[in-house]
Length: 155
Image (cartoon, rainbow, N blue to C red):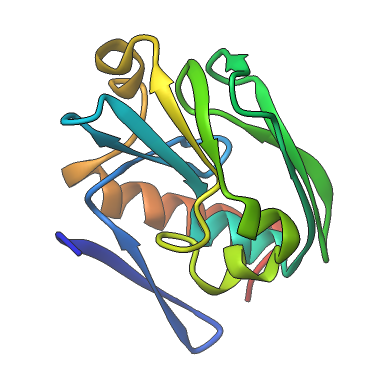
């Protein structure tokens, strides 16, 4: 992977790849492939740490158009049930059927095999500017870890 940010929670080290952008609120990641004009979306390890093990995932159908911040599916986890919100707008061109049939895959490999959907983005340039990436990553991870500890979500 191209660059990473590492952090430790409860004696376990996690890695966040720097080759994608992250939604500060929903902890969804977006990796843009300019050659295909597509964005792969998944959930980051910070979000998964707060949620616990996933038990159930639903994803919107291929062909569905969704706007930034709107739901493209739902999840049930050890600590909560909620909506999956897209970090960018676009039309779903693929969804990860393996994640639907085996939600544990998302926890086990969130940045590769555990991806959720692929979109053809409506306006990647404008919307990706609202996401955190690059040099801003370490400060964002540190602030989220502080918030998680204050909320009692992690030790």
